Image: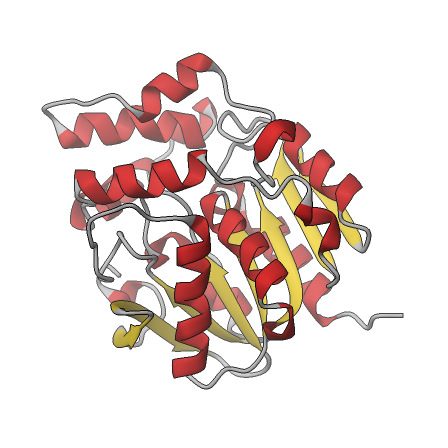
Length: 275
């Protein structure tokens, strides 16, 4: 995690879990809430969520294998392997049960985790994600090609890829340079990026997802170029105890682009009584 004081005001910690070193931070009080980020990014992605969530929850953020300050072993990785990393992290930190929130590839991990470790999950929040497999509605070929481009100038390449995650209007704001800097200060080795992206491409819980038993909030944005909003609608149809929230206007990382409505809806979902 980049300069952890910018995220939570606390120092990052490292523990051995599932055979690798995982970097994590804990802040706040209350029931545990664990946030799982997506492809190519670290826990710093949650800088607009942690201050809000930590007022209601003991909020745990961590770097997936292959990113941030966690170990970046050679591949292959699988989504199940990364879900096992989370299970081992929880065991090491003596967290028996938590709310789980995952975005994009982190949503893949959250789904796999909820299916294989149901006793560890209280409620589930899925963000800009899908169950993979034959029902997955893919991104455009142009967007896919952009994920694999290379450029001799990392800063320029980062700006190009940010255009997949955010709307044109957001890309005109001063926040963009901050997001570029976060990525520049937290470079991901090519082998780890490819190991993560390959894990995502073979992920398939299209049939199993109907077995999710915990209350679930499915969230998405109307202008998502990476995980089209139809995927959220598919998840909502398949998960019996689920609610669907679609944000009109923003892109893939809508929780960064317009965090307040998302934060409010998540807190409401996680704190309301279940009838």
